Length: 345
View 1 (cartoon, rainbow, N blue to C red):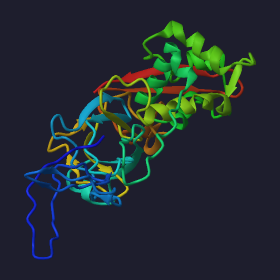
View 2: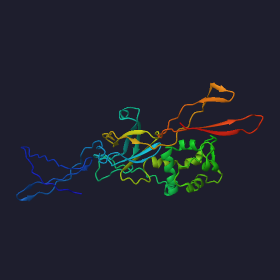
View 3: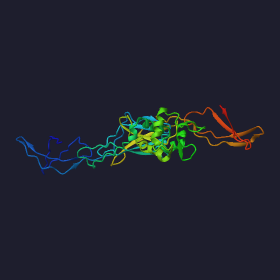
View 4: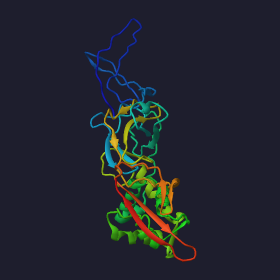
């Protein structure tokens, strides 16, 4: 699109003139034509000049209003959102996100730093940098199914990764999970997905995972959820947030985290936007698994035994009780006798 600008030309003895064209877009090639004017009229325009390029800079600060917002909070994951930063002539290609347990840790290598690709990259006519191809959108067909989508969101919010979810699911460590274990779990831990909102939909999830109808699934079959999980982590699916989204997994339940983010383009990294002194909290979940108790010799008598143990991390909800299961077995009497003792403090 051609733009006509009129101005006063100051002539020197060499009859050379200089004029500055204001308010142009950064990082853009412009071609110029000039014509001189007098009281009799305008001369013909000159030939087109060589390309004149405006300079580029690192991206601007991410808009402070509304700043970094919490889109969703899971037990071991947090999803953040913010408005896109102005690119200053070189399209934003990535966003950098740092998460830490304190404000000071954000400045050190103690923080968790992730780089998330920007999939919607700006282009405009005459841009200096080669127009980047938008990253291929990961269209995951499984996410079109609302049941599978909600199940993947549940796994991501509660466990953060498929590997941790599989460890929780494969309680016996056998490498395979049967339908009975998938629905009911074991005697000690109960159903693994008891807090999943749509219990009736678990049968549809199982049918998808156990596509061959073998009655059991392996980690390879469970990994069919990986593309959808990755798309969820990258914020490229199902998000209703109007802006850029990024997710962080591998966090501790019930813990406060501070975050900062910045934009990156082909020139470099823009300034950091901190969340201020307002931390974000992951959701609480059931306590971590305890280590095996140890016997206390000094407390042994003919009628009692003593045990001690270390309390686990409470996962964000204060511990209010302990449950002890013990088994007495005489090899001559056959099956073991089981009882449950509950001690609340």
